[in-house]
Each structure stands twice: as structure tokens, then as C-alpha cells.
Amino acid sequence: MSTNTTDVLVVGAGNAAMCAAHAARERGKRVLVLEAAPKDRAGGNSYFTAGATRITHDGLESLADLIEADERHGTTEVPPYSKEEYAADLKRVTDGRNDPEMTSILISNIADDMRWLKSKGLRYRLMYERQAYRRPDGGYLFWGGLHVGNVDGGEGLVRDHYRAAEESGIEILFGARALRLVQADGVVTGVVYERDGEEHTVQAEATILGSGGFEASKEMRAEHMGPQWHHAVTRGTPFNTGTMLNEALRIGAAKGGDWTSCHATQWDAGFADNESNYEVTNRLTRQSYPLGIIVNRDGRRFLDEGADFRNLTYAKYGKEVLMQPGAVAWQIFDAPLRPMLRPQEYEVPGVGEHVADSLEELARDAGIDVDGLLETVRSFNDSIRTSVEFDPNVKDGRSADTVPPKSNWANPIAEGPFYAYPVTCGITFTFGGLKGDSQARVLDQDGTVIPGLYACGEALGGLFSGNYPGGSGLAAGIVFGRIAGRSAAS
Image 1 (tube, rainbow, N blue to C red):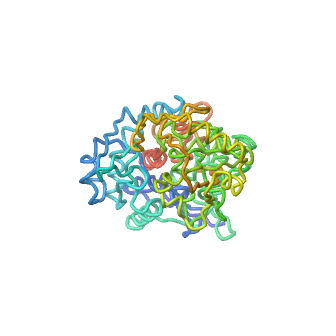
Image 2: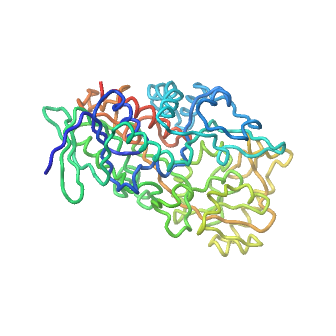
């Protein structure tokens, strides 16, 4: 067993981990990053994202110094997104279970921290294809508080991080899987890792866990969230198996946040290779559901598709699908709605899709109960408030007063051809992690700092529970990653 030394050791090489590495390196520390995945599979869950990052701002003009130029900006409206709105969204979607101090830290730092990353070469843009529909006048109105994302999505995010790391002298060891934390007199002094079948030790002044949650471990999912979660599909990296979370708990770390819930979205159930697919990444998600209806095998609706903007409901609706018979459901649209679906998701080659000229034929082809679907569509169509104008850019109040209700964006499923997209539950990341303080230092059961150990990203719990506002995961990784790197370097 060989032994290496460094000043700051970072476990993981996704967005949060790399922010920690950048922050420590710019303070003059030698930084070594251990990444379990090989180089062509590296980046954790960050690689699988669209790069969407929730940021406070005062409108489009205030973002001009951050985002790439785009000829559409002249006809675009981006409503301001204040700290107060950010905090309110976090509190609302988590039913008040978000940690208030972590929330305050996040919303106070994210705008400056994204500009810090831009100074290191990360690139951002407005996310037209995800967060705005074209209006009749040809312009664009952004909605839902989520407006900015990385150029080239998660792939661009990871690529830019690694380029910045190389330029600054950060060393990344790919294919290096951390196995155990090392302690001396109660102080964490490094990690034992495995690479090419051999174990090695890294000794460090500070160790930062940016190694994700336990979403890729079926056993840990079933243990902490319930047996049904054994059947969820891992939509992101297969390397986030909770090893270092368990190691931290072994040495006395306290759990932080909600270990019983996670980010889980509707995921293509018909695609042949729909788990941890590095080619199509996040394009197997199905996020145009607010426009149509979602039914189970019995043809029955079971949730409010229009309860809120997509980016405030999608991360909890995967669980709702998981609880349906066979852990599967279908998104249903008709001919007028079909052109509004996101092409980068619904037109992937090999996508799970059923198309038919009648609802009866659609149900038979998809495996949905025919009578159930016909009755659901009939009662849904009959209950729509057609006096209210449909507008996908706002919560329009065009409801369907049926059971369950649809609060917004209700349009009749009436004109063929009809479309059904099979979805299952795709788990992205778990909300439970380690308990930390405002400096991202890991705490033990008594609330005492464990010397030498820090956490960020999905390994740091407390911010989310049950649901999260879209784009706040990458935002939290940036803010708490930077804090962890600074703390570890101090």
C-alpha cells in the first residue's frame, strides 16, 4: 500500500467537489481529488444535469455580465428573482423542513459565487428550451424562478470545471474509489482508496466529502426510504453508493436532513437502456407533463399535473409514479399539445412512445385499461374551465375541476392522433446527508466539529426534504462547495 500526501483532499469530482477544490487551490493549497469513475464517466450527477442553476437576480439586465449573448435577449422578459422569493420557494416545496441557516447562506451567496465560477471559465446562458415558451408576439417570458444554466448543460459544466482545475494545478485521480476514512487521535487525516485493484492511502490536513448521496445503492434506498425504492431507476451516476456517508457515520458523524426522501422525476420507462446512460444523460426525463394528463395502468389520474410550474413539482412526482401499480404511468397528450413538448426529451431516438388515432387504440397499445382511460379523459375534458385562456408562461388558472383537480394549463385530450409516453421513477439524488455547520465542517452526534472533515453537495444534508426547487441542487453545490474549500484551506 502506497501513501501520498496533500494539503486538501477532495472525495468526488462533481460540481460541489470541484467548487471545493477550486476554493482551496486559490488559497495556495495543494489539492488532490479522488474520483471513483474513470475519466470518461466522471463528474458525478453533475454530468447528467441540464446545468440549470437557481440564482437570485434583478432581471435580464442584471444578468448581462454572467450569461452568453443571445440574439433573442432583445425580445425576452426575465422576471427578477429575489432572495425573499428564493427562500419562500424553498420553504414552500419542502413544507418548511429546510434548514433556515443553510437557506440563508445559499441565497446570500449564489449570485456572487456563480460569477466567481465564470471568472474561472465556466459559461452560462438563458435556458430558452426549458424555461420559456414563445409568445404569440414572438417574444419570450421566463417563468418559475429558474432561468440560467451552463452552456452545453451538465457535460459543459463538468468539462469547464476540469479545464479550470488543470489550469490551476489541481490533481484529479480518476478510477480512485474512496473506501475508508483515516483518523488519528480523533482527527480525520485522510482516506484509503482503491485504484486498479490496489489500496492506497492519502494523508491530508483536511478531507472534503463531495462524493454524493446513496441514490445508486438499492440496498441503502430500501433501508432508509422504503422497500419500493429498490425498484427505482438510477438516472445519474452509478458511483454514488453512499460509501463515504457510511464511513462518516461509522466515526460518529451525525445525520443531516431527510434520509427518507429524494429527488425523483418521471423517467422514460420504454427506453431500452434507461439507467445511468452517459450518451443521452438527462434527456430521458419527461417534463412537459403540465400540458397533459398522467394516468396509471387503470387509466386513472393520481396527481395534479398543473399544481405549479414544472420545476417546482417534477422532483417529487417520480415518487408518485413509483407508488402506482407496477411503478409505471403514462403521460397523455393529443395532437394540438404534441408540438409543445420539449423535443430534446420527447424526440430522443428510441424514446418510449405510443401513437394512435383513437384513445381506445392508444390504451390497448400502451397497456392501459381502456374503460378507465376513456372515463378519465371524458370527466377531465368535461370539467375544464374553458372560459379561462390557456397560457403556459404563467399559472393561468385554467383548471379541471375533477378528482384529482388540475389547477392550471388544463386542455382537453380530444383531437387525434393521441400520444402516450410510459414513465417510471428516476432517482437523481438523496436528500439525506451529513450534518454540518455554517463552515461545512461535519458535526458529530453532540454537535461537535469532527476535526479535519468537511462535506458539500449531496453529502451535506439539511436543505431539501420531500421536494426541491429545480436548479437549487447545483446552486447548493456551488455555495457550500466553495465554503468547504475555503474552510479546509484555512
